[in-house]
Figure 1 (cartoon, rainbow, N blue to C red):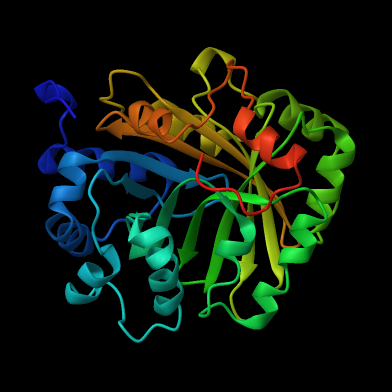
Figure 2: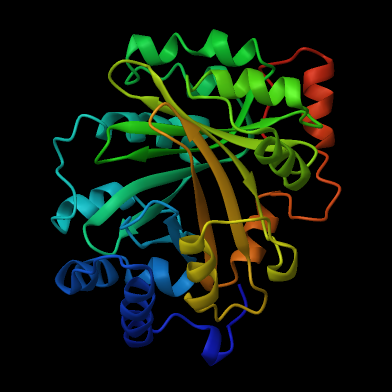
Length: 323
């Protein structure tokens, strides 16, 4: 990656100031001591990766931040050494198994809450991967592995990312589904969550914003295999074209600073038994757009058609390599 202009580089002092101001604007807690530990432990990842802000529309929810890593690193081991994560956490073996796939090539990134520290470990698998590979690693409990048939039955056969939530002991599995997404397929995927079907205008808005071949994240309880939530994403939505969002998200998108050459705003519509909410992410430093482009993510206004996915789906393959 070429050197960034100084105003686009990650600066720890500026980040602390921006973190406090953004958290105050949305009513989120900050724990400076934990923030300092995070920034020191992962100083190279923040310096060389892309950093972004995250939050949800839920009142009082955390202001979170993530680095998308350009470095191949055991972020879990580093977090354990720094006291940010318990090395005996039962989810650690799952991350280890996923990280060992495909010759050990998956790249780990990490999410942190401003008030609590380590939140998630996030893995990019290097492209389209068979869901069977991801959901059959030995560390995954049998009830989670048993969910594979439910996803394949909906045509969700390929995964690009996964994340573990350390506090909730859950995992998000990010599928790329062949679209275009319509109301019938939306309803089938939504039904996995057991939530109340959303209003027709909400569904219409989701369908209008997701790319043709869409990204849906499915949240699984890592003990029971229960599906807690489903979330549909729209990436790099311009400010002047953003969908209706709750007031807390609108405030977040207005006040969270971005020093990237191109702003990258992400909207996620999350549905589940416990209620629905909106997620938002916003680029900060390190050129988030560049990283997501390199990972073949689709942005608002693009065709959003994955020709490799379509070739795999058309042949009925669930064992294709990375694309």
